[in-house]
Length: 117
Image 1: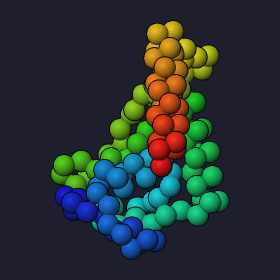
Image 2: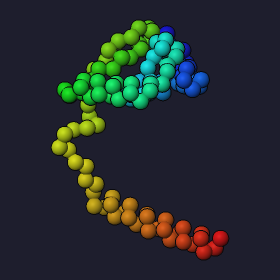
Image 3: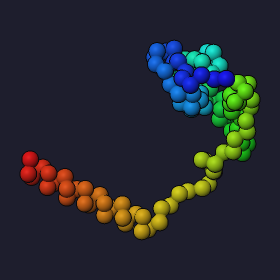
Image 4: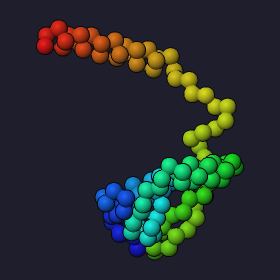
């Protein structure tokens, strides 16, 4: 069973297990002792791991190594949903208008604070 905290040997700081798993999924760190300690990767290793991950993501899923409740590691298939080729996000017109209105209000508040400071 994994401990509640994971030691980052590079920074000598403790992380939550989920944070460490997130760093490993983002190809920033790697396990030294599974579920106990991680180390940060250098820039060359990060580039290599991310290019490896990109090759794995050529299908519509990718594999992630996960520690189960019984402490054993297993490979889990995760869908790719964050990036779909050809899909462009266009916000609704009313959302854009409200964002622009809030920026105008922020600008007015900033000018008021600067005038009365």
